[in-house]
Amino acid sequence: MRLVLVGPPGAGKGTQAVFLAAHYSIPHISTGDIFRANIKNETELGKLAKSYTDAGNLVPDSVTNEMVRDRLTWDDAQNGFLLDGFPRNVAQAEYLRAILAEKSTPLDAALEFSLENSEIIRRLTGRRTCRGCGSSFHIEFEKPAVDTICDKCGGELYQRPDDSEEVIANRLSVYADQTAPIISFYRNEGLLITIPALGEVSEISTRAIAALSAAVN
Ligand code: AP5
Image 1 (cartoon, rainbow, N blue to C red):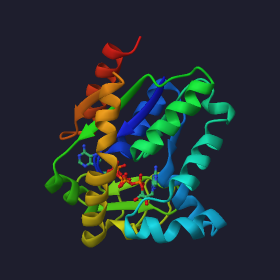
Image 2: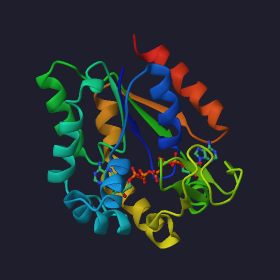
Image 3: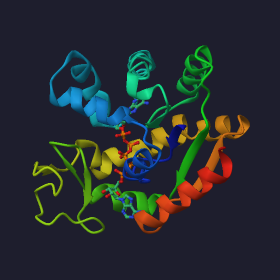
Image 4: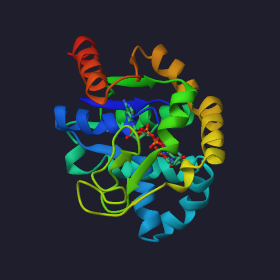
């Protein structure tokens, strides 16, 4: 299965990606997670990406495209992958189509998670992220056993700098202007599957897997 997840910030792409990647035994490749790991490790890529991610703007395509091209050459991605957070504009979608065409391994589907802005803001302002393993929790919907500690690895939970209300507003505007056009792109390619993203996490995973099973051989 070669899959991209599309949807506004906070729609639950990362949450669903964990289930889908396990279900299809494919790697979960999140460009946001790769940037955050590089920022944490203070690499050159991290230093470059930080000002963009903190403000909720897109990291330049020249950097992001190369990073994804390289990641897709790893052994674990040769029999399928799930891309979460890439592509993020039409130029990235065209780039991805071109690199997959070189290997005659086109995408199977683009799975869009749709959610209203009021719910997005509720999810993002309440999200807590683990500094250790990157897992997401929520102060209301996915409470950790201890407020500041990750249930999975014992790492410290923090609020992402881009989860402040001001930065969320910019991320939503960047999504509407730059990312939403990829929905038409994938519709025209015959790859788009749209899933309503309101409801229990497990319900949404079930919907997504049923829709993928019906659409992809
Ligand atoms: P990235 O990390 O990709 O951020 P994003 O797309 O804004 O997505 P999020 O991680 O915020 O949300 P999500 O949809 O994964 O939701 P989640 O599952 O966590 O990118 C960050 C930055 O990196 C970008 O702004 C940009 O600067 C840069 N970047 C990344 N990719 C790039 C690219 N391709 N090009 C250029 N720049 C790029 O869920 C959110 C919360 O809701 C959690 O707390 C969760 O527990 C909760 N939740 C999830 N599902 C449910 C549910 N069903 N009910 C209730 N709560 C739920």
